[in-house]
Amino acid sequence: MHSNQNTSNGLSFGHGDGRTILVTGATGRQGHEVARKLLAHGWKVRAMTRDPAQPAAKTLASLGAEVVCGDLDNADSVFTAAKGVYGVYSVQNYWMHGFDKEIQQGKTVADAALAAGVEHFVYSSAGGVGRVDGMNITHLDSKAIIERYLANIGLPYTIFRPVTFYENFITPRFLRRIVDKGVLYTPIVGGKDFQMVSLSDVGVFVALAFGNRDEFLYKVMELASDFFHMEEFAKSIGEEINRPVVYRRMSTPLLWMITHFVEWSRTTGHFGIGQPTYNQLRWNNQSATGGWAADIGALRCYNPEITRMKDWVASVDWRGMRDALEK
Image (cartoon, rainbow, N blue to C red; front, top):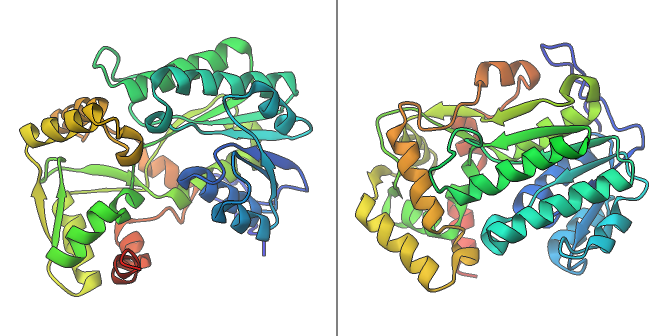
């Protein structure tokens, strides 16, 4: 059933009226959730992936998406996928492809959308873009370059800048330590506010933007769902799994060693971290607000059901997901 809920801004989540959205990276974590939310709100989805046979692609197909084969390194395939669609959702993976290739891929999608006459282009950037120039946080610098390119070529765009994802903490390296040892362990300074966002909320905002083009056109919005201390986050997880979970901060020297080892071993794509992560987390920790600067009050006017931290924690099957790692 498609939602017709109105936000406190008077906007309707409505439905897509049969129009099609091309979602790049549709089998990745973010693209997959966006595709699901668009389908739930009545949009037709053209899900682009390099491997239509993989399970995530089959899941989207079962939900009604049109799965098409495309490669962001192949401009012709992207243009073919963009033909005839109303909108494009563009997301790239810096950690898999690196600085230069992410920029080229972002430009390729934008060029294809422009050539195809797409009416609304929604780009997934990242929190902090525009505030970290000169800090060598290259996974944000690349997105700043793509943002400027969108404006320069005249695309009708909306830019969303998600902050740290809640879902980062249900990856194997966090799950095992949380459930088995009762420890939440990150480099983030405790005792001060830190913003996070759910993938689901990103998907809702994308659906809302496509459904209310005039309201969102040319907006640039940092996206967060809630803010809290990391100690509060650990406590909430402990209450959910029925065992105490404490928060411990990783030391700066250890973080430096880990990120440099990952760079040296050429495993940045696997771990999703590298030297730029070290630079970003230093910036996060030196900022009084944790670096991120989403206006959560304003975001809640658009999406009254934005996911508060305790609700997200309660939605996760922590032990079940941990057990699944051993299967």
